[in-house]
Length: 316
Image: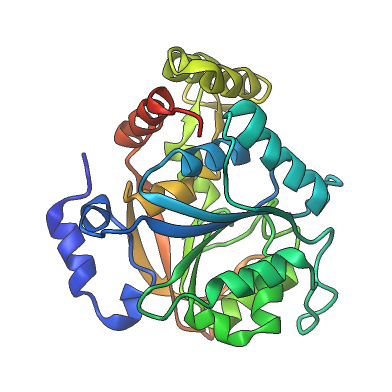
């Protein structure tokens, strides 16, 4: 089941406050002459899902990658190591001889709510955003900590008028909670939430429900997709089977929920924007505007699209 034209029309006709975070459906994308501009912020190297997202974005003609930012994680991953892992995925695994800039972001959380972590990646993001407007926003996908995006907002608050943040994080709605991405820099996530920037959230519960494979299922999907697909399947086998759900030993490709949203393979709801409590749960008592929450992913079309793009990929 694809998102219907009626749903797409509903997003076009929604009030302006909701439109800023509304889904970028394939039907709408099809009517846009230029591909969607994207900067990806990723803790690539933490596990395997970031590499899937990096590769999917790079091989999608609907997307124009402007840059990749590697950032830190609690397992000791540095911005430079994440950058190098992105470069490995692009150049050695995908064979992309030409690609957008890949930069090292922060090596640790922001020091305080009002103290940005300045680095070349933050300055790059601010500079890239200057070509965009409230009517034509740069899509910033966050599949790691919010450190670099929050730092860009603190350095240049006007960036919130030029970007849209699409993030993977939190356990579920309405509870919140988070085991990794937000937890790696809660202060930075609070900066993003409080800034008013248009915000889309893909959470762990939805990713686990719609974007999980057994090792055998991942191998079947990627079997005839070339060397990149074989590498992804081999890497997935290292993580597969860590969860048991309804008799299936699975592992989710968490971060691809952001790509699914961007390509129009999701169904979403607009909610008030809660505050993030000390324990990373949601405080709904004093909303800070609105956000868009991904509720469903059309994995029946998403994964065949990914596999078809891998088959069609020609390094360039």
